[in-house]
Amino acid sequence: MPPHRPLDPAKFRDPRLTARGEPRAVVAPLALRTLWFNTGTLCNITCRGCYIESSPRNDTLSYLTLAEVEAFLDEAQALPGTPLREVGFTGGEPFLNRDLPAMLRAVLARPGGLRALVLTNAMRPMRRRERELRALRDEFGAARLVLRVSLDHYDAALHDLERGAGSFARALDGLLWLAREGFTVHVAGRAGFGGEGEAALRAGYARLFAAHGIPLDAADPVALTLFPEMDATADVPEITTACWGLLGRRPDSAMCATARMVVKRKGAPRPVVVACTLLPHDPQFELGATLAAALRPVSLNHPHCARFCVLGGAACSR
Image (cartoon, rainbow, N blue to C red):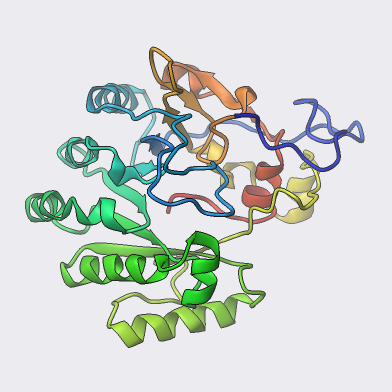
């Protein structure tokens, strides 16, 4: 699958310099605090704006196995001076991977009180795992296992426009089940979807949560994460070293300062480590076969680095 490229072909070409010849921003690794696993690109639905192009047919990234996840967990916790705090699972739809409950158990059972985060659409693949989820909750408690449910907008029509007719009702039903069962749930929405400001969006989600008795504070940016739009057709400026000061941002605020993601490409003999959750396909962001090799500086040589992380101020983990 080819990587997304900018509208201006002169941009994001040289990892060292921008199109204007200015030094490109680079993020040095601070510590591995969040380790992500992409469990596979297969998904039960096809969304119009999916940055990773997941679908029921896209197996560009193969299913990871429990043994592969455990090997990277072993390495992560053995790295010196690297306080791993959280392990995230994304896809595709992670619950399509039959090993996911065992992967979650492997995370939660480890010493150190690791948190596990699953990004899910809360539809049928998740509901098929109700028994396993209850068992994990009962054994480890609900606090360290977080299910983040994707609701692109509080209005069903807008959500369905992106994810397909009836998808809002199915996702909401899954969210309600999680809430009734006492799981820790978060919601992920889209900041620019529907043309509203953030205050109006949060107010709309608050009404939705109140109407259904969902115990979430829509004003909490963790409980309700509003991600910036990932419009690949919109031009975006390149990030230079001078931008940190101009924008009032720090390099260590970018995801790639404290996170890496493990993926397994279709037909590959083993998984590899990439810079972050947004860039699993672009070869320049493949950093090696081990976490130790992957903990090296990352050049912000992609539109997603600008629109999502630096200008958007977003991060996939908490």
